[in-house]
Image (cartoon, rainbow, N blue to C red; front, side, top):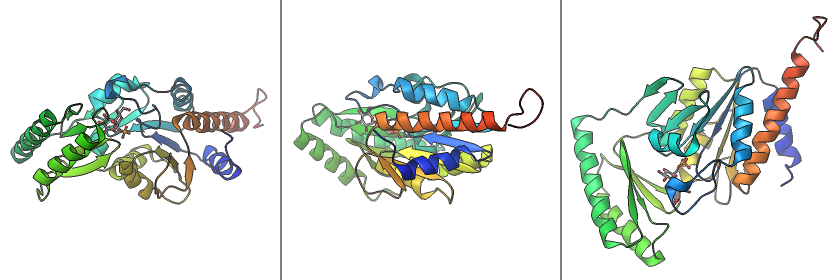
Length: 269
Ligand SMILES: O=P(O)(O)OC[C@H]1O[C@H](O[C@H]2O[C@H](CO)[C@@H](O)[C@H](O)[C@H]2O)[C@H](O)[C@@H](O)[C@@H]1O
């Protein structure tokens, strides 16, 4: 991909801010989408660029994911400095500091109902499976026959619609249910607050990432990966393009930092 002039200009501006947060969705952005969720891995070029960014002064990196933190840690193997938002904003890990989800008894009951509904539906639909998260469940349909997948999602929706204590989200070949209301927009706002970032880059590919794009402010850069309606200001086609974008941002910020550093005579170059 050639990074177009507008995106290059936005990245150049972003590279020059005092405090920068680079937040990336994981599946479909850092990792290509794959058949089996447990097989997802970061593209090496993106992972390397994230590490380079995290090592720069006044620069924070984050993965903002719908995955449970345990799953994100397993597939992403993030650098210790990379901040993590899991379960679409319900879980947070800032280095050694972890904020797990705490469910009250009503939420635990709702989670048990959600689990029962998704597993019963999945049993009837070959190729589907249920992923477990601390505050939710995911009905995966990527490996199912298209008609079976649609029927399974419709059946699960029918049984859960109207439950005020279970929040449903559509994703890529998944239906997610959570007993905690959380969004990536809230996750990003929290990260902006703790890092005191002057500007944020956020890249995402899925409908749930739109909450993140809508939480962006003037001076931030939102990048939608792939097709679909979006509130993001920029679009690239694939995770491979994301690797180029994040690589360029790391290069630009490192160069600007080097220019700002005093030379050996003590004067700024
Ligand atoms: O917010 P993300 O980091 O993008 O996570 C969203 C969901 O990603 C995973 O499912 C998706 O990726 C799988 C692997 O490529 C794919 O098989 C599945 O069809 C996708 O929907 C993950 O399993 C979910 O828990 C995340 O919520």
